[in-house]
Image (tube, rainbow, N blue to C red):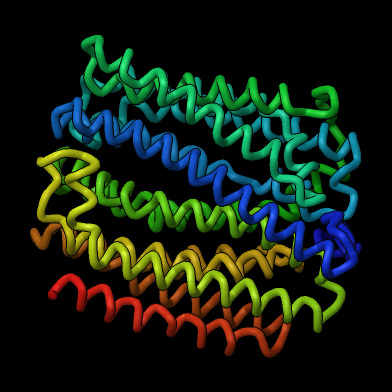
Length: 451
């Protein structure tokens, strides 16, 4: 059975059918999501800022490498299993969720094995052989996350995001509280490892505490086939996405060294926090809203257009802020070692702004059960890796590396819009027109900077 055929119900996400009630729920959940994700990312940012202030630039670069390895593992092992619980018509079924748990556990075990095998080569690749032990112990993080209880995704089907926010926020708070005590003891970059392990364990514990159903595992062949049909394009798209989300930092760490990696990672974190909050809030709201309207073309278009309006306005405000003040914010957060990086922040903010916009057509495609375009988008984004590599190899610095990603994001946005247009004609033009909202924002940000 195909992913499309299996998810044809117009009420798959369990949203309300009466517009006034739906609007109230969307506003309520939107505010809740924003507050929750802002808190989670704020805790994460504060933790990294404390680490950045306490560690030398070299040790912070190694800590960033540990985080990079974790992000690589998570990206390269993603099958979208949890999102299918939200999207599928029968995603609330106990056996469906139990089979999803089995898939997630298998992902955790395989990811842990791959990390153990890759630890020593990765340490040699980045020129940090003494940190191989820490990279190896990182394997415990994906292994622990394999035991997450996915019941919070069931709640998200009915636009109840409270359980998911608890799974997001509480582990970040636990890790933040533990940061200063761990920094008080000598250990340098290893603090990033211990905090990652603590956060993973807390996430698993919270996911089980908020669950309504008992944790179960099941092995259902037809359901596994559906997971594969839905997830294989997402999984394959992860490989070029490594170039998009981690490739620039791999290049910087390999060719420019740990200190430049520390500077680039700090700038990336500053721009990532609001961008990631906006993306996560958008994803949590967009998928159930669009999935429940997929069989009503007019309603789907109205919801898509409103989501595009809101996302474009958010991205424009975000870009103007970081172009105007990013170079001031960074040293305030991470210390005086991170001055003079305003240009890097500007390019990274432009990249994140375009990623925000791309979330709208991306979630529309997923709501329609169409995940293959994610692979094409990832491949297009990955083309930006070539100019970034050339820029780093020829000594143009981290600003040029950041700039290379912007063109890839623009091309990817155009591609995803065209794929959505092929499925639902008439949606690409309003989306691309709203992308132009970033131009006055960029002009205003640059004017404030120069002024």
